[in-house]
Image (cartoon, rainbow, N blue to C red):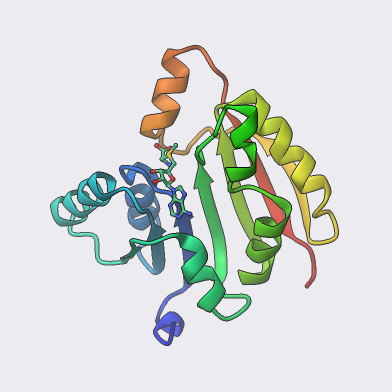
Length: 178
Ligand SMILES: C[S@@+](CC[C@H](N)C(=O)[O-])C[C@H]1O[C@@H](n2cnc3c(N)ncnc32)[C@H](O)[C@@H]1O
């Protein structure tokens, strides 16, 4: 990303859905670049509408599997990464498809700058437990804690969870000196 030096910081959002949090991040950080990754076309359309309606100038959309992007990028490029409600794959036989695994966390640690942070939230208790287990395996790369998501926008999937009475679990990860 040769244009990276034009921005105060670079933020990545993975699986932005309809882009509620992406638009919020772009408005809150006008001097940052928000790299927004999503494969769901209707969601990309919603974010494009938001960009046009709010004249947002600092979002770049990547419309393929985020791993394609992460493999190509140089190390230590992002200041912050957000992953809100990654697909939960609730059936046990599908758990292997979950994004938040040890190997993926290692890639996040590689592309985050020193002192970079990642926010990962899920509305599925079983996924939260699994995320914690995967984070335990990555303790040499991240410190982590569970936080409240107060002050962050409520996304479509979070809204559904709240309506169904499910709590939201948010992890804040901080890259250790790497
Ligand atoms: C459960 S939805 C959550 C959407 C949104 N963050 C929210 O909270 O409303 C998960 C999203 O991640 C996207 N996604 C899943 N795997 C992805 C990948 N490898 N790269 C980019 N997006 C991905 C899906 O298309 C889907 O829209």
